Length: 256
Image (tube, rainbow, N blue to C red):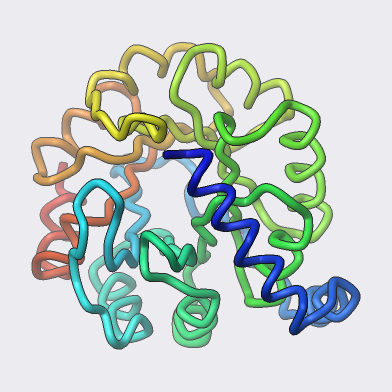
């Protein structure tokens, strides 16, 4: 499944490159408003941080929410107390787009994450051109040389990489490239199985000074509390927010 998602994302990027060249995207990235400091926005504090996700569908759950106005939803997230907003820009399985990200970025002051299957520099430049402040890198989808190259490019463009892992070996690889934001995804992107205890098993491997993010398997405040107790500085939440009252749900989660 992960290979299919990456291949599809690269095919879609190739189509966009036919319409907008790499040189033009690089120029647009250089002219974009500077990125918001995501490390400052997500720095550890007494209360957990929530990254609130705009997510229409997923391969594991199918359709979740129509979300005809992602900007309005993003404003609700900001009102509810989210510390950052994740926008799924993958179109085939998740129903997202870079246009969603641009709409969100135009109305919020929070850092915005481009969540996609990033595997080549063109995608990084278009993320910056669209206004992204953070870019997701999935360790399982990349060899170490590519991971390092993309990580360094993201930093060079003033953005923050969120490096996602799913095993002790992947956490080690994330730390080897200098990651300051390390996510642990409870969902195995090859099988789509969930293990909510995985974060707790890997958290001690992530040193102090690196922000620890728990991803997936969040349906209730109890799930957020579970991750917080295991050492999460940040919890990324999607489905629970798009299928319920986003403001009320966020405030409930932030009380954990």
